[in-house]
Length: 250
Image (cartoon, rainbow, N blue to C red; front, top):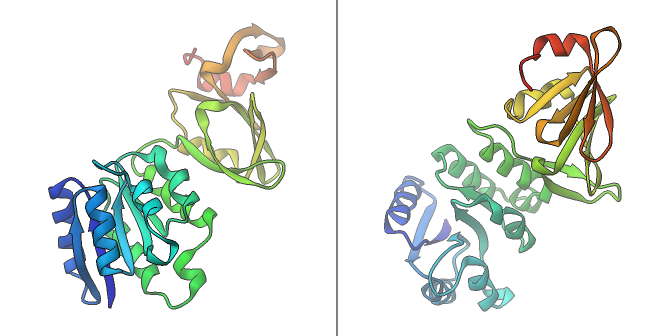
């Protein structure tokens, strides 16, 4: 049996989660809590294997609840919240997983399936895998606003695309150019283009996509091409072929 605690300050959210968990034959809900202080007492008293923990709560937030507990008192944690800006901090405290409200039952089923796995690697996963699952959740029915990318020192971070001036394809790798430096991710420009908000990003040639808000000036050039001057001074080329496709965008 997987012994589970449910912590959320909204009773309807607790009821929904408990209802879904009750359908699982090998899951036992050992208790519920509606505030941070209640959660601390519940987790100390019941010692569950897994806790579904809301982040924004009265008294103590989800992170503060964990800070109150000794390492030996902390179960595996699945953060549950409506606010995706907490994602990176959640994983910094070694969250088992992360559910973004409203979540589909299939997403919860995936979390429980990993919890059932006897292999530590399968149960815990790496930061990259957990963040990719989060990004897939965030992207359901909406354009991508964040991507997992790599810094030049090899460290992986979650990059907000609002920071990106333009993206360039180099073989099977994408480079994301920002005021703070260049970040990398494997992939193709065509695949990325389908995930971006078409109102904010524009493909200007075979190898580059530009964020429209980063554009300072357009200059007519040779053979129907245009020079695209960015606010930071970088100059790109808007080819005739792609300009014909999206000539009314500016």
